[in-house]
Length: 406
Image 1 (cartoon, rainbow, N blue to C red):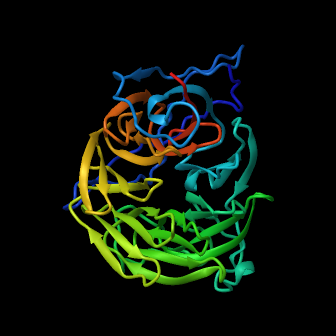
Image 2 (cartoon, rainbow, N blue to C red):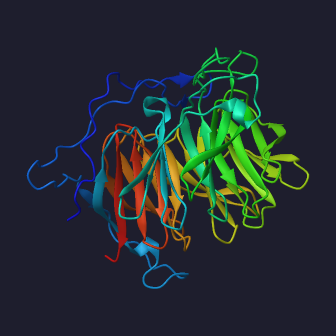
């Protein structure tokens, strides 16, 4: 039994409301405060009530695995612990070396850092002095709104996107329904030193930056800008944005091939995925993948791309040689973020409106397990060394699961 690390999340004032973007049937992100919904905690023992786990019938045998023991698709998730505290986590990400970061948006103005046991290591405030990073046009103190994060390949740094900035010089806060030219303020990506767990740089990008990815060669940080419909390319060595690539309405998830040759970006306002050559920055398109593509994951061998279809309650498997959808899996309502196991045999997706996680065999594209979560699961990450799956729930918690031998 794992003890709860902090007190249960307190109720949050306003409810989350979903809207559809005109013409594309897209369930957008929320800017209202998240709903309350923490489970009860036994005041005597400190035990946390944990949702039940439902499992489907066993799937056919997998043929390959790259890790000891059964492949991930043959394992089953079991609950370990639910973490509470002064959090409202939009996302959670693992470094692979035992560090986990949760981004708590403008509702808490923090990034919280944990170890593999769920112990809180630090609460990093999003307050910065932008002028100290070379932006003299923004004197005084400012706050951000941490959305997503990505670690550098070395693990020395984490890059965190901020939905909006708050303070002198920022007058047009980001919105979920927006377009280029509407005056939305440009925002910033923070760089966090993972040794000190402090912000040591700020890099200006587009309006309402969402997803962040680093290229495996360590050269680029890529950021999708929701309201300017483009991708920021940050040169790591220079520490600044060096290129902006137009992509179309509501770019979101990013996946990069292991040789850093191509980046894929989900265009959530339609049914396509942009393919960007990272040597020339030419853009191609994979069309007709399904409505509302949100998050992307790529197979370890770079042969397949997986995409959550937020508007279709499905996950699609794309063959990158033919650029065709090979198979689809039906999951819960509004699948948002996704993780993939290190051996590439299992996908894990959070279903925002169903309050569940779906575990999918990548070979058969069938759901092999469904796990109940707390309200509004939105972020997810997989840690290969511990075989842990972490799920961030917008209602105020982070759930830890172990991918155990069944």
